[in-house]
Image (cartoon, rainbow, N blue to C red; front, side, top):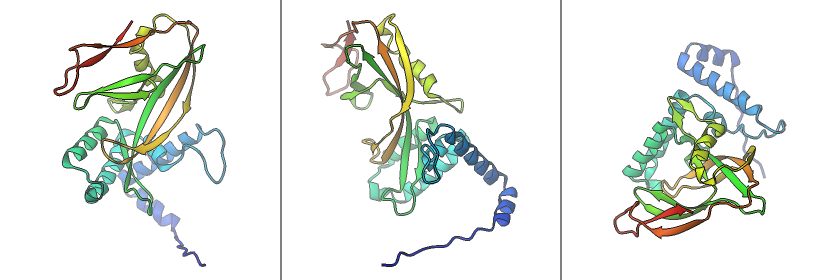
Length: 250
């Protein structure tokens, strides 16, 4: 069997001349190259076949916000042209665009031949707090204004956010997480990491393949006791048609 092959001929001088005469394209390519080189420094090992953390999505995530917006908007246009295929409603597209504007996610177009048109990318920082006896602190519920209280089982974490076009680093996001875990009291924590533990799955809200870039910190608690969690009836969270519940720490 014969495999079809395409030959791409590139005139380097012509490309350099075209890019040099167009400032927006030149700035975009400069930012892409700088982000690629920065990702190389995070790789644990280098090879000429595959270098971790240098995929297109990773490089775009490391670029400045103005360049992320351009790339995400192009991907959104490609998605809108095929919205019938994914069954995306106008409301869902509006929410997706709102996430992009707020810096909660980016969209990147997938390579030709991929079953998906675009991929959603979200950066998450999580913390694995483990007790000396092997028990791990986890989240059991999630509250959303539109959905109410939902069962959930995951590590304490948060999406990395953008403040004045500055993308939070994993350690900055970790500080926000620890502020919500004050119930641990004054315990000695030994910080490790972060380590990359990415997850790829379909988003329930948008029905899009989502690549969660997860930076997971590890912490060990020397104190033998951790707070216990129990459910009680409360009117603090009230969603029409649902039983009001909340979590209390004792």
